[in-house]
Amino acid sequence: MAPLIVANWKMNPATLKEAVTLFSAVKEAGAVICPPFVYLSALKANGAQDCFWENPPAGGGAYTGEVSPQMLKNLGVEYVLIGHSERRKYQGETNEVAEKKLKAALAAGLKPILCIDKISQLPKDIKEGFIVAYEPLFAIGTGKPCSFEMADEMIVAIKNKVKVTVLYGGSVNSQNAADYIKKAHCDGLLVGGASLKPAEFIDIVKNAC
Ligand code: PGA
Image (cartoon, rainbow, N blue to C red):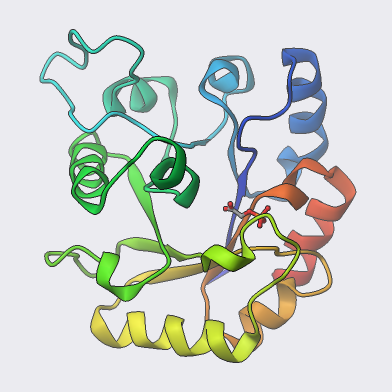
């Protein structure tokens, strides 16, 4: 199976115009693109960066500022990042919250991508076929990628626990993308900073696939 490449734009870019330009430059690459919520409907993107932890039966409810998994599904979104380390750091998200989000996303028919940096963050009832992104904290947004050996050790340990799809994330670029796939047994990549540079991101996809 072709590796799953996911672009996490984080809180970028600052205008819809720039988002449209960036999206048109990378959409043919066939990756999952996760822009900020405000650009989702204009771009018809297939990924989101977060969702609320409850999926009310009506698809909505009295939760100011939140976006329900059902709303994302209704927009045509397919994948959603859950428990990204920046949400854990800045929004105080815990493993419990991430697990609730995971369940709510699944209930809405989305494909959640659970981001972890330790095996202990895997939910007890994690099932075969789920998608997990291993992202060591020291490598996220730092330009200091994890060694292939260390990534391999973690990814194999996760897969030995449960047969899930495992992505690697943290300072991925066009130079190291292929080696993560070949040497670290990962099934794809979660790309932050480099996904905002169209030529670099397209090279990541080409080199990884
Ligand atoms: P980075 O971010 O590629 O900029 O290190 C990865 C991520 O946060 O998912």
